[in-house]
Amino acid sequence: MKPTHIEHIGIAVSNLEESIAYYENVLGLECYAIEEVKDQKVKTAFFQVGDTKIELLESTDSDGPIGKFVEKKGPGMHHIAFAVDNADNALKDIEAKGIRLIDKQSRQGAEGLKIGFLHPKSTGGVLTEICSK
Ligand code: CO
Figure (cartoon, rainbow, N blue to C red):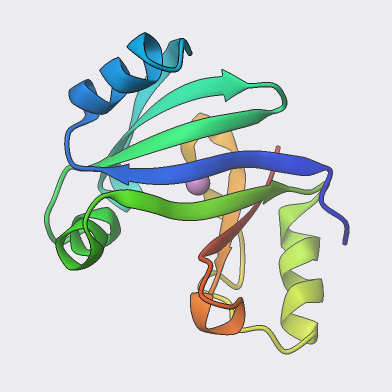
């Protein structure tokens, strides 16, 4: 398994509108999509920066993973996502190397990507996502 690029960086925010305004007005990026991912109880906003996206995540439910994260740590960097050719094969390879997975099989993420998370306890504290088309 070898990632082709950083697909996106996930950032937990407490107010999507305010954060979009920051990325647009200060950094000069353009929000090209807003999408709700019901499965993960989040609303996401996307910005393209070269090959990489910024994915803002606002919780739609305080019980969801982002809601809990923001309550515990406050808004900020949440995860880094690596693009691979085949997320399921990559997850198998990674698990075979003794890394604890949150998702043993890929599931459907935003933008129709196949995604799976590695457990931060196995990755030096960085919540890591593997994704493919
Ligand atoms: Co992500």
